[in-house]
Image (cartoon, rainbow, N blue to C red; front, side, top):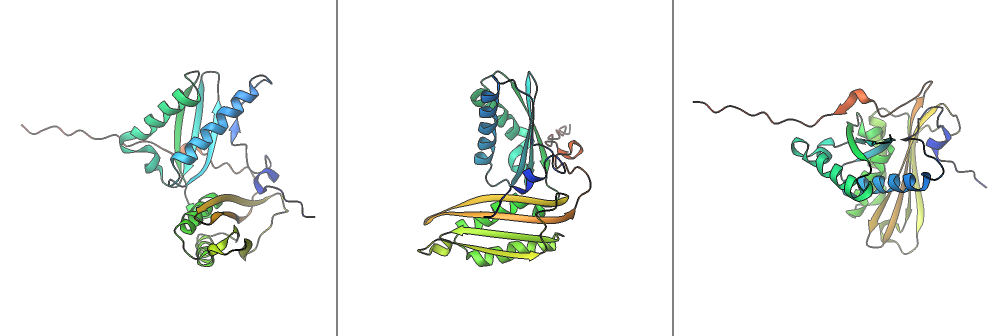
Length: 235
């Protein structure tokens, strides 16, 4: 029997920090968990094409700070920050029910090709457009290796290319070290909704060894909405 462990949980908090950073009493825990799951599902559903890599949530007694790591910040921010204002109102009214204020921070992904979650989402969108799965896998692997990864592995499962019998196919390139704790391995999962059923996609990206904490959410790299410049009319 194989012992399958999530690569990120296996390395938390040795390399990767927690994406959720808050404390709750036993009575508050169910409500806080329900709100967090609802926030993540809302963002993933509303911005499916924005290439969201990860979401970090921090709580205080009066405010919830949500940091979104995305490959396309402009899709979420909108023109002059109108998108952020819409999201904030939806969260405060629907999920938080005016008990907390929502603060949103948007951070851009430096190299989307080295994000396993983004690569899995891109592969899922291509599968939904009915492209051959083997070509999608080969192109994704080549793109990741070109970006500077030391190894990559992709696995697809389901009725591939509309076949009658479901099966699992796997392709790998380079080296992959899943056992060593200091190995920096990014893992992502996505589902392609096709006419003939769901196709599950898993991606592992190995970027070498890390000897310190690897925090994706760097507050120095936050994206701020552009403020429109008002020009004075000539007399």
